[in-house]
Image 1 (spheres, helix red, strand yellow):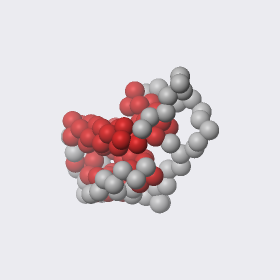
Image 2 (tube, rainbow, N blue to C red):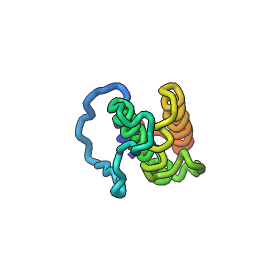
Image 3 (cartoon, helix red, strand yellow):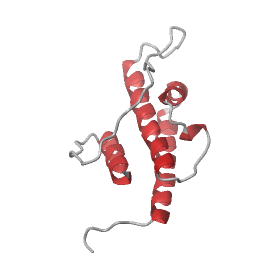
Length: 122
């Protein structure tokens, strides 16, 4: 699962195509609508909405990986609900968004390193 998650994150961030794998990922948005509110000053910026939708989905996948691999990370940035991630992103700068994703990715990688690694070449 961790390779699929990391592959998905890399593909999304790099804009590449992910080859099909034996495992599947399901995004459960729980009916959340990725839209800005009427009073949101950035509500007319489609690029920001799309960026925040992507950020929220990746954040939820990272949080799910935290749970599945029993990494034990806690706090709002490790929530599996896309809504709060999207809402936070609306007002965050691009550098803060990238920093937050990198933070979670690094923490997950540290967790995966503690779990051990599987090497096909052995």
